[in-house]
Each structure stands twice: as structure tokens, then as C-alpha cells.
Image (tube, rainbow, N blue to C red; front, side, top):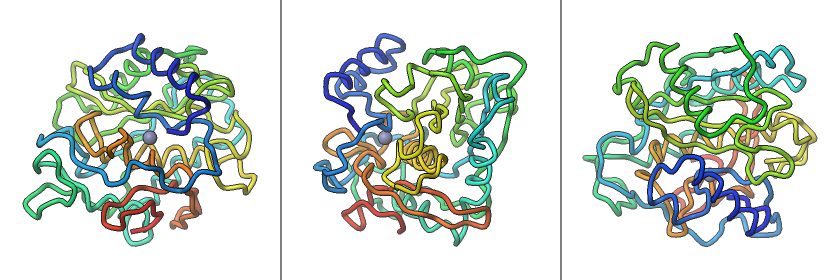
Length: 305
Ligand SMILES: [Zn+2]
């Protein structure tokens, strides 16, 4: 989390819970699946939560062993994209694999099919595989009608189900690795996103007729201006959304159906401890701002591993 203020965070958590309570566990911590909008940049790069441990011994929906990203550009408002978000997000995921991706490989140490409480995965576990080709499995401009100006959490979840149908992922099996990133167009405020809101983006799960789905609410972060949602000060409008989506992608991969996956003792996921750390990653498709991730192996926030 990147708290704006404690009071605002608490209010945001209450809003989320009122909109769509998904589990009792979510009530115990403040919006655990969000990248917060405002950060105290004077704090240390790693906060107090420390090592991640596995919350459940499940064999599906815990992590995403073979990540598949579906980008959904929702709404006719995508006829305007002043910062070039759609091309940038596609380019980032087109290149995020193989030996050039020295960031995503941090996640290869985490697993499912291991005892709850695991910190170091045993060899018998099902590990997250580092993608050897692009994890971008599909792109959909769903522009038949406008996205609501302030889409609710339930409307975002419904759009994820629309996407599952659109891509033909109509059983649980493909949805054990599919993550639907609902990217909202400029000028919209999904789940209250905006300069007076509390978050940059968040991820969650939802039940649907195609099984449980993992999805992300990725707002049009460049609407906040350069420097928002990243610690880089390069003045690039796209750095903030790259930092934000790499945070959410990694958290979805390592905590696929919250809260079954990997958390630290203060309820943070792999990205939450490391919101004060960003780095550039150069792929075949461009150079992108990736957010730091917690590595149990390194016992630190790192940007490669
Ligand atoms: Zn997070």
C-alpha cells in the first residue's frame, strides 16, 4: 500500500467492502490488493513486513504458474488516448519474457501446492514459470459503448467476465492463469480513482459463470500527471502506469485469488513492501518502469532476480 492518509485508507477499505465483500479475510486489512496513490518517499525502501509466506496449501488459484495477460481497453472513450497507454501496455507485455526480463524472474521462487506457512518452496511444489514467450494472450478494445464515468467494483468484475467470454475462456481451466486487466480510458474514475482517491490500481478475484476470475482495475494513471504512482522522476507520463501495472501483474501472479497466495506479516503482497523502489527494464519492445518486488531469497526488495 501507498497510503495517502490513514483515515482515507480506512475509508477506501470500507468503500470496497461495502461494494463487494468477497471474503472475511479482506476485512482484516485496509485494501490489501491496491497500489496506493501516495507514498511517504522518506521511508525506507522496505517496510516492516518482511518475508512472504504462503497462506493456503491449495493447488489452484493460489499463484498463476503460467501467466496469461488479457488487456481489455474498456469503453468508446479509448478513441482518445493522449498518453499512448494502449500501445505502451501492449508493448510492455509483448516484451516481458525470456532472458531480457530480469524482473519477472524474481517470481520464479514462489509456488503453490505446498504447505500453508511455506517461506521457501520445496522442490515438490508447483512453481511459477518464467515466461519463455510473451505472456500477452489477448487484447480487446471493447468500444461498442462507453465505460461508465465511475465504474463500480461490480461493473469492473462484470467486464472481466465479458472478457473471459470474448476470449473463449469459458471454463475454469484457462482461468487458472488468465488475468484480465481492465484498463479504463482517460477521464474516467473506476472505483473512485482520481487525484483525491487512495489508489493507483488494484487486483482481485470474482466468481463468474466461467469459474473464478482474476482481474485488475487499471485506471488511466497518466491523468494524474507525471510522477504519480512511481518513484522515478523522469517526467514520463507512462512511468506511473508501468510501475503500477507491474506491481499488479506480480501480485496477481503470486496471489491469484486473494487471499490464498503470498503475503507478509503485515498483510502486504509482493509489491506492497516495495512501492519506494522502481527501476528501468529494457526489453526488445522498449524500456519500461518496473516496480520493485519482495524476494524471500534476497530478503529484500529487488528489481531483478
Ligand atoms: Zn499491492
